[in-house]
Length: 410
Image 1 (cartoon, rainbow, N blue to C red):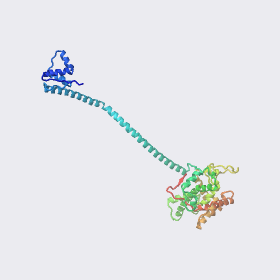
Image 2: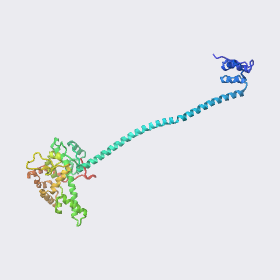
Image 3: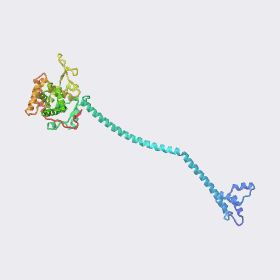
Image 4: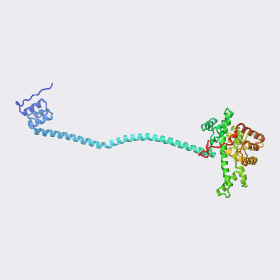
């Protein structure tokens, strides 16, 4: 229970009331002063009571004194507070570099993480882009090397067949007049002989060699147009003369006979070229074709070539080998257009031209009996291949024009 204090202002003086309050509240300072025989003034008593948060009696001795004491105490409190504020500010100033360092560290860590994340994404994107560019450049380099004969690729029969199907290249459409896709394989499929159906093997072989043959014929046609344009002129430019000189050398005409050049510079019907390639390479399965890209079984007496296993001991010839199939077709074309053994072939071809007829394989096969030792039998074999496989359908075939002049080599 709270102690009730009753002060009788009428019975006691103001000073006595202050002392009584001090005793009742047990103010220790009063006891200390009493022991030392010091008499406290009213003002001092009021200050002690105020200091100990004791309410003074109503008839105060001095409001001014109390006000001064309160101002003093407030001033002290304010001084302490000011010191505390100054100390806090000083501390903040002192630790500011540390705080800034911590903040910067946190900020740097965050930015670093963001940068790392961003860098990783950018790195991935750059890596993907670089891989694409590298793959694209490698592809271009590979195609260039293939075109130059410095590299070869051998696809299997199934892959080759699927490639042609994906590109919409089929012989039925070509026979109906559709142009041939300019796809040039550099090597024959090694497993061509494993195709179960002979018809599928023959069709795939034709699809492979037809673009190669048409490409060589296209070059001859372009040269032939240029030749006739020159022949119609009375005066030739130095550039045209240089071109004629190169052509005479290519077609092995030493006397620079323009009539002879016109006779030699002509195409080989596709039906004949396909039939001879099929016969000489066993429809693309012979050792010479698979190892040396030799489609036409041409002989050579140089060091480079493939030695036949069943060669006559009295003969030292080899089968001419090539880096790519296209080179074999080019050599075959040059052989028929320049060798003396095929003069009759070229003369008959020129006669057909003069008569305005279309060059047909069956009209010219009989002039190729010197191509093989079997002579007439060889001609009959070629004619049978042409008829059985309807190869004359391809004598009017043309390549599909493309932006890439060379087509695509694979």
